[in-house]
Every structure is written in C-alpha cells, then in structure tokens.
Length: 224
Image (cartoon, one colour):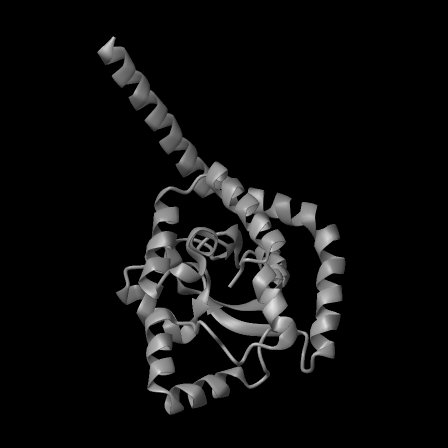
C-alpha cells in the first residue's frame, strides 16, 4: 500500500512536471494571445478614456520607456503616464539633496512616498490601470500577462547580481508574483526572490490564479 501511494505520488509529480514544461514551452504564448484578443475589445475604450484623463492632467498620455526583456533584449514598454514629464531629472535632484531618499531608492528601487506622481497618476497606480497599454506589448511578443517585471536598462547589473535568472529566461509580465503577493511590503531582493520562485513553479493554473488576484487588487485599489 505504501509503495502504491509512493508510486502514485511520483506519477502525479511527473505529470505536473511535464505539464509545467509543456506550458512553459508551448502553452504560455498561445494563452497570452488568446487572453489579449479576448480582452482587447473591453480594454481599448478603457485605455482611451484613461488616456484622456492623463492628458487633461498635463503632458503626454502615454509613457514609453526602454526595458529589458527575455534574453536581455531591449523593448519599448508602454504605460499610461503617472509621473511628471521630467521624472528622471526630478529623481536625480531629490537623491542629490536627500541621502535618506537616495538610500531608499538604492535599496528598493522605488520610493514609499514619491512626489513625482501626478494627481491622476496616484489613482492609476492604486488600481494598476497604468499598466493596461502593456496589452500591446503582449500582442507584439515583448511581454506576457504574468511574469517578472520588466526592468530599466540601467538596472540590469542589479538584477544579475541579485541572481534574478527569471528576468532573462522568460518574457516579463504585466502582473506577477511580487506585485500580487508581496507588493509594497517587499525589498528589491525580496521582489527578485518572488519572481524567481514563480519562474521555478510556472504553470497555467498559477498564471490564472495571479491574474484573478490582480483583478481583486484593481477593484480594491491596493496597488503600489
């Protein structure tokens, strides 16, 4: 009896392992395309309406920034703009003037209270709606719905030094493990650990679960 249970457990593990490999190699991209085409008729008018709100707040509606994707490839990542137009210069100035802010940025690669975020941007970030234009990145093949976050070009060394293999081995995602399960409670190293853990346990059911939890974050406005 004990042997039968052990054999059954091994069979289950083998089946799950093969399912994970098959989904990683053959299923994840078709899943992304199917979901993108299914959601696009709903998302297009939402994105257009939010673009109009951002434009009324001043500056351009979209924000396009080079990010690092699978195999270290650089691509243009699309977002609705949530910060002032000179955000990078403003960050440098703040870090130069405040050692505390500079340390926080160095450790976490984000600020708990970021004065660069606009009025409309605060709402977009709380609901994660600023990420919606990345559905076009998914269609183009730059990104996936679920995966590690795409990082800035000048952050590549940080991620490599932190052992973030997942960031170079798969398409980055609109949402992911640390955004859903860690969110603002995690440090930079913690975020890398969340994404690498997701990479090791990748499955379709894991993706569906994270997408469902992301929908809850949007409704509850508990985003970053």
